[in-house]
Length: 342
Ligand code: ADP
Ligand code: MG
Image (cartoon, rainbow, N blue to C red; front, side, top):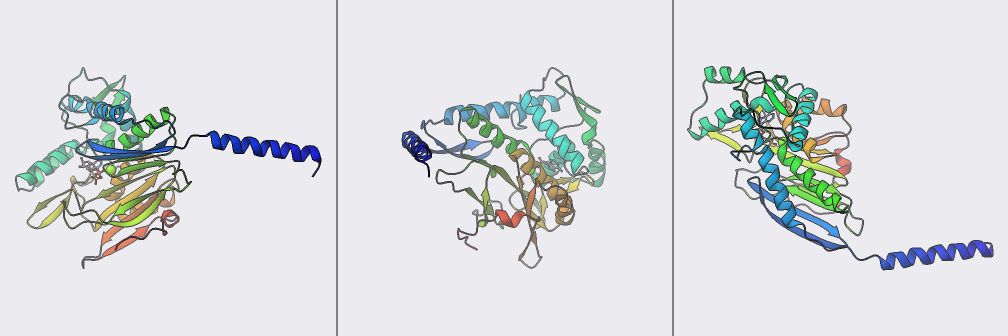
């Protein structure tokens, strides 16, 4: 090595060493709370050691003011009540447009206009009755994602009785919105989990990927959560839809809270849970619900043409056991270095 080259090399090495010594260590910040009728849990690394919990709590409140069916004067509630003064905000717009895109892609398996049917089934089951076929038929006529449109910040419906329901997708989007907020503060390594819809960006300081657990189907709505698989999440999101935790029960039979828009009835197959890995939590959440309606076989065919999505399916074998299926590249995401209790 020439003397001048050696000198240059040593200078660069000294600069690199010096700047890495000057870099402040990133502190781990972790907190959680309640939102959207469920929990949230956030972890990130910040060299400035900032705690953004109050800002994130306000952000989640603002989110519900737009998209929650449980908030009486939210934009979605006002739209469902045909309040023509309700103006659509950017959160609503993103969720609406993404929902319509997933409806189109899934051949209508995903459909936000199932609202009246979701209400009827839930309400009827609380009263211990099945909605009769006449009722299903009349509410089914109100279903059709192409019957609602956004025009000049207003939701235009074909029929005033149409009601929209964002519960299959809004929670996922809230994880993305929190992630975007953290990025706006210069944070690039974070894990955001809102009720099991999770986005992981960057990595931990030792460059290890974020690891998240996928839950084993539970026997009842209140059973303890047990992890069946651990997956590595690098700049990706995961969401799980399941018929094992949220369901209606009548005469010992469980009915899913996912409605098949084609029949107007709860989906009725052996699929207990679907976990989807996608570039954003809104897509993971929306597609998890769509796949729940499509069933494993159709969903796997769909995934063959959508390499940006990966999924993991757990079906019941009807003998108390489980059958697991994966999309092509899902296995590469499984973390085999951590032991999982079976
Ligand atoms: P979870 O993650 O709790 O399993 P999902 O994300 O699957 O929940 O969303 C289920 C909710 O989505 C239902 O409670 C209902 O409000 C709504 N929903 C039901 N069926 C559909 C459907 N086919 N398309 C879009 N939304 C639906
Ligand atoms: Mg969903």
